[in-house]
Image (cartoon, rainbow, N blue to C red; front, side, top):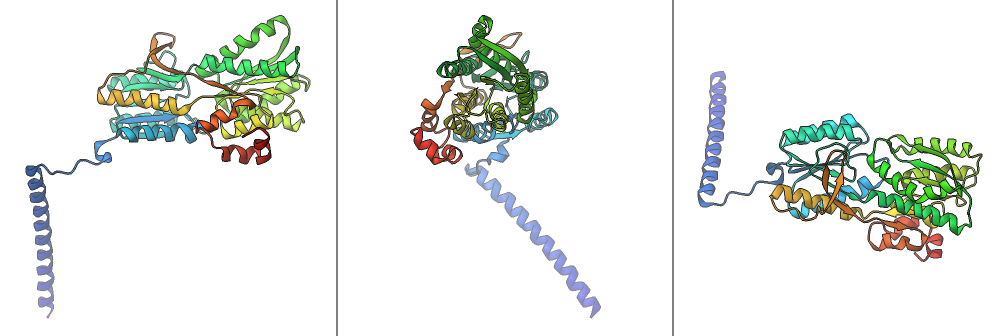
Length: 375
């Protein structure tokens, strides 16, 4: 009986093995037949490989990177049939470099980066160039880098809008003499330098004449809003608790300053600038906590970068890089978009453009405030 069972087991194994071989042979023959008749299925997106890599800087300095840039870029590449890998370095330069290495290893043809600082991004660009990969500076210019293109807004113009908004706010409040502070962006971000260049060009004549007193001028490391709040608290103390304006480089820093002003019951009494037109920022404009901000149509920026990448991947002519921006050693072909200054009077422009929804803004500002402002 034992021998009989053992023999049956051996027979079953042999039969199973033969069946698997028959199935494998059948599969090979079927594939060959399809190839001969021209009906081989097209490779999937994953099989085709990742064609473009995008590295965003963080999710803390501004909500825009995840709520606007990522979905707009993803949609543009999907519409063009281009496979994209979009990742966020979350403010970590080492992680940024690791992501870039992984994307280059995947064989991307184009690498789009909003760098954390110029030296680390320039090093990645040099590595990409050796691998024959084109790079695009996205939103932030890499000084002394090697990017093929740069896509951003005219950042000096952004700063000018911030400065003019502060000046208009002070004039409206009847402040011919004013104490102001600069709460600048990260010293490692060239954009922060350009923003300051813009708002200082507007406000410097009044500072020079003595009409405005620049009480303090500080930069915030890594655009860190928490650090920004601490720095502003020190600025307010330096001003003896009496300030007329805070020239802050973006809404994250502006709202950090507003939080300190609220603790001192000064919010709404001090002009505070911003940038990015987030839902929180627009709500603060409507409540009067921020005096002005700047709207940058991120969809246009994302589409501009995507159009460049798609042209590079498909080998078609680039037509949208009509400007030039000097990175300290050369002029980089650029797509430079036009920003829009925002106050209470035109918050609805951002909503009408679909960048923010009325529901999101009014949930923060309250329905009563929205209705009072005609939103």
